[in-house]
Image 1 (spheres, rainbow, N blue to C red):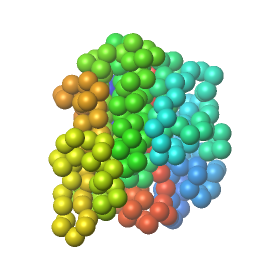
Image 2 (cartoon, helix red, strand yellow; image 1 turned 60 degrees about the vertical axis):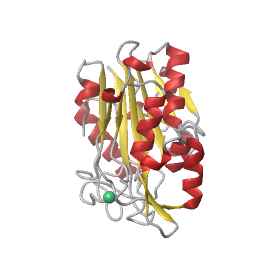
Image 3 (tube, helix red, strand yellow; image 1 turned 120 degrees about the vertical axis):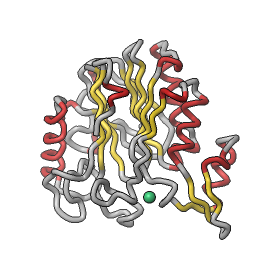
Image 4 (tube, helix red, strand yellow; image 1 turned 135 degrees about the vertical axis):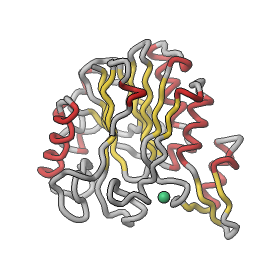
Length: 258
Ligand SMILES: [Zn+2]
């Protein structure tokens, strides 16, 4: 899956993978890109090579964070090239969002229901990926990522474009009061993101909350694209942690400055 809104100026290559076209077998069938989920590492590397070849990226250069559902943002350059490309132990520890202005260093992040965020500034030529599950969403990692783009690279949020990739939709994401109470503290308009099931449970729209965090960061509404695809509903296309009760593969978001 590619995003014309990011790629239109020819400055960035950005992709989100589906689960199809790879070599992994059940329960990872078939394009599993996650190294940490119990799949055969050779299959994962072959899948990563296959996807990256299709979009003109060197899979040996992929950089990834350890994705601990925190809010730490790391700025990287070519010194980090390949961190996490061959083993998850080598990924950037404690990191859920990565920012760079270095061309040719592909950022990557791995998903099965959490929200993939792509953020670019075509003026300062800066690219970022952020991983937001419910914890990253209430920690407002989207906003913290934009703040690093501003502080470290002088990006102007009005110039930035963001894509909210496929994630678990409000249709399928039922949560309890513990999560809703945290959401209330993180977002003034939290009620816009939830549907009360009136049994102590709510259906939460993580993508809408992350869009709000991006708007609060200063991005323009029309520069934020939500692809609105539910990973839990679309079994043929996507892995879903919730649908599979945790035993499944991972899709990847990848972005590189050309
Ligand atoms: Zn759904």
